[in-house]
Amino acid sequence: MSFSNLEMKVIRWAGDRGIIKYSTSLAQTHKTQEELDELVGALTSGDEAATKDAYGDILVTLIVGCACANYRLVDCLELAYNQIKDRQGR
Image 1 (cartoon, rainbow, N blue to C red):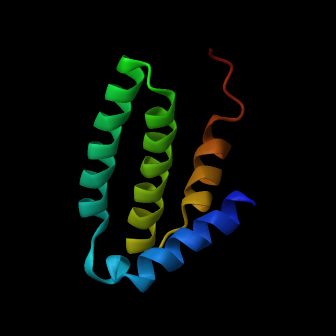
Image 2 (cartoon, rainbow, N blue to C red; image 1 turned 180 degrees about the vertical axis):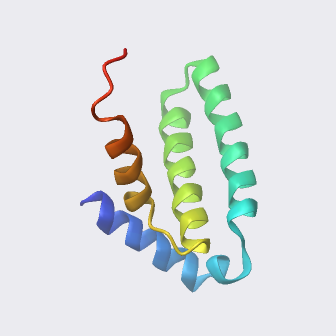
């Protein structure tokens, strides 16, 4: 399944639960921070399943946060890629 299709499924899931209507991008950013903290813990402990779960949860919170702002994460990713694609650094 493509990223765009999964993104739309997450947006529909969040919409069906009223998350997009009643949340904000800032609230979702706080959720993203919680998930980042979980990722650090998973990476520190070497727990591969928890690491994958945390990465997925981070993406969900980013997608929902973008939807709250009427953005699509894939569009934000494209914008960021276009800014970095010609950089020569490592």
